[in-house]
Length: 561
Image (cartoon, rainbow, N blue to C red):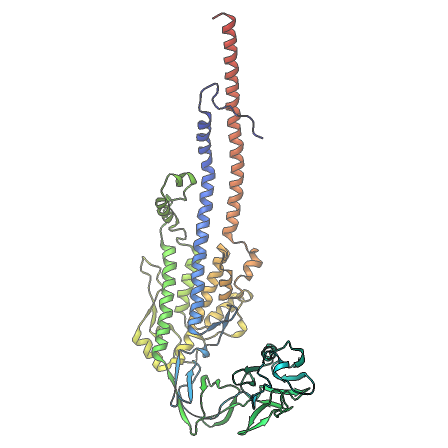
């Protein structure tokens, strides 16, 4: 508990105001450390912001190029460059029967194709109306027939390797045919059941096409599936144009069957499939062959590369802006007292100036820019096409100008389109060639020499992704991932592994902020002690003055004055 304070009772001095002024002077020490802490927080915020932009650039570019897809859970799944769909185009001369598109790996040329049969699923349906009553609220009223009231059957498919037996009691009165349909579908057997009340027919079919999708129905009770007057569902299916009762046998769908040039009788379980990197969607059979023509899609490829270059240049501009801004040290973070004396707009403008140049000439950001530029300058090892260097594609890097760190990419449209026309596969290889798979995706497990080899073997775009990922990891060391941990993992699942193991998930800036917090706490304790000391001294003075005044009053009274 603080001692009782006497503020100018005897002396008439404004003690509280004097002590406040002295403490304001002392508090400048705390303010300076608090300002340093705020500068660190602002730097951390700017680091995390640029890291988020780098991550989104990499993710968006991969998705745009088709080098990755997004899974249902939102994670990123890498794909092969041969799967890119914007490099080649395919045209079918019989679009009514077959639609086609081509992936990057498709070979230019003209191919003869004939569709012999389409893929289909196995299907069955009631041969006649199945209800014995207009009351269809339950199996008991709908199927009022003699014999046992138990409907019991087993469905065995190749979907999950397990058979499922279903039992329904017609006389129980608490099960409808709709509920029976729902239970069959919920079993996830790869079959679909439907009951159409208007037609009063039951339908059962395999969910997927192809001969490999099989079904076997075993009737265990009252001929629930066998056609005939006494059956419940009267199921039948088509066999070579003739309808036959469904029995206790294994049935399956049919495969698609096509001729592709000299390769005849190729089968697929679906009407949508990929052959030689050409994507087919079959709609009808054809009596004769037709042509599928594959060629380079020059305009699409040019537009995709230009989009990438434009987005990359925005990143270069962002890094250049952060590292080239001049820092004005006269604009420090405002103290609370200073903010109170200013309008909100004045505070906003001041802080805008105070935040400028915090990452001026930052070594980490400069390394990211430098590695990106260097990566584009270097050739690609082991390419099989006509190109091995960026300049051969009509793409150059902007030189240092004095006001800019340079590094922006510039496109010679005519030269790039000529390169695409001459050897589009070679262009794709110099941009997207994959390094030796043995080098893996976690560079923490690689030596410096292996990382160098990986960069040399990688296509220029993939090399950029690796260089940016390394830079992002450095920024995470500096400032932590903040709220973007999931974003960093999308870029590379190993991104935060070394941060957790080597730094215990505490960034350099966070360590500095913890140190600032300790220093501020210690200074606050010193200030509190010093303020108490000032008050003790002034209180003692007031007590002494008060005592002297009492003595003087007493002496005056004694002398009769």
